Amino acid sequence: MRNLNKPLALIGFFVVFFSAIFCPFLKVPLKANWNLYQVDTALFMITNGLLGLCVLLFFMRKLNAFRISALTLITWIILSFILVYFQINNYIGLKFLDGLLSKTLDIKWGWGVLLLGAILILLSVGKRRKVVEEKVNM
Image (cartoon, rainbow, N blue to C red):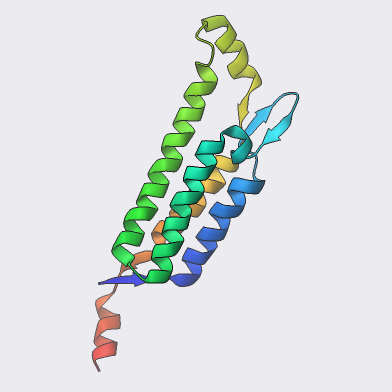
């Protein structure tokens, strides 16, 4: 039996949603900071799609599926960070130009906030304690 901490899950939903829109994910020298949509549109849509699936399963109270979708969201965020990092470092294919490009593009703190929100969503689902079950049975 699983237990759901609703306020923690809602905070996680808001953190993931608003960090994808407002937090800087990449610093481009002449164009300032980019949010997740400006970094890659498909990455933004898939992230919000997985978040939407988490929200849907949250309201349907399908806690096992909710936990699996939260794990999928965390895996997707980590994978997308790695893919963006490698794309910055291997964009052109020439070692000298890739070195220049990787020194000018900086990964910003938005990735950490996005991952923190996804971890909050995952931590909102836990196992029910036996003490709680004994009080319910009395």
